[in-house]
Length: 353
Ligand SMILES: NC(=O)c1ccc[n+]([C@@H]2O[C@H](COP(=O)([O-])OP(=O)(O)OC[C@H]3O[C@@H](n4cnc5c(N)ncnc54)[C@H](O)[C@@H]3O)[C@@H](O)[C@H]2O)c1
Image (cartoon, rainbow, N blue to C red):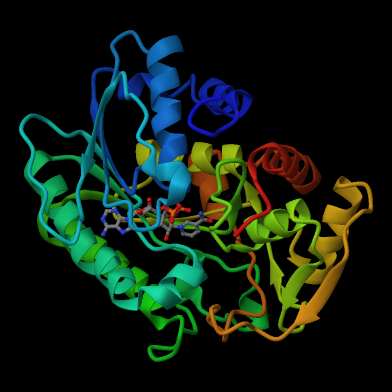
């Protein structure tokens, strides 16, 4: 098992990348937030590409200040293809030598943590993104900024599924604003660098990615449920339970993100997610009951103070743009993904908090 992830998932992503992987041969790739959930996948995939696919290995620079990397991310493994650098991207970053690609993932992604760290959340997406754009400009690197589906706020029904052209319905004050608004500013910075300097920027807007490797203390919905199942507790569904989401399995997401990095039209934003099914939280529990063999109970409760209320009622991506421009299509269905995730969490999670 690579870095708490499933070897078979890393192989699956690596195989799907065979047609485009040569672009990474001999290149230097900088990953910010590289010890987080998605960052550890990118690192493992590039290591596997070096082992199995690339003629000339790529070199990795993995940056993280470990603020929310948790116990899984804070144990730094050997990186045969590069190095880990403890760095807070709120400060400028300089390095010798070329940088060809930047995956700017650093962010405070879980609502539980952005409630706890609102200023850090805002600054990593604004100042942190500015510093990474400056580096991309100096080095002539291609940069992918990880924005979020949250930049759409709480879309009107007629804009769900939501295309990239939808401008959003977002509150600039409130418990979610530090995340939603700072990601919007991060996107604006990308737009400015592209316009002003011709920097090759792309933005991805991920829609609820899940999979093995999510920290038990992540507090996003699926690790939260998995922790309670492991502890033998009833699941807690917040609010009405009618709010809907879509869930994209990690292998589909990482493949899609790398297609955007390599083939996205510079300056453009892309939704990456799995639009099917759009599912309510109560129906999600029922899916989990099915996958787990029926042994799961749940309660519908008020939002706890630790969780920012005012969450969107519906969220579902329109992925036509990625399908048409990048030939992107998710292939892991929800039951398969839930099966892989819960089988993994059952072996790794402790049920403690
Ligand atoms: N996973 C998803 O479903 C999802 C959905 C929408 C957007 N995103 C965005 O994608 C990115 C990666 O998401 P993730 O799920 O891996 O999140 P994560 O919380 O698991 O990882 C983020 C990493 O960034 C690091 N970090 C935070 N602030 C930093 C700073 N100032 N300097 C350096 N490192 C810093 C954290 O320590 C952590 O290791 C985030 O920017 C997130 O907002 C993810």
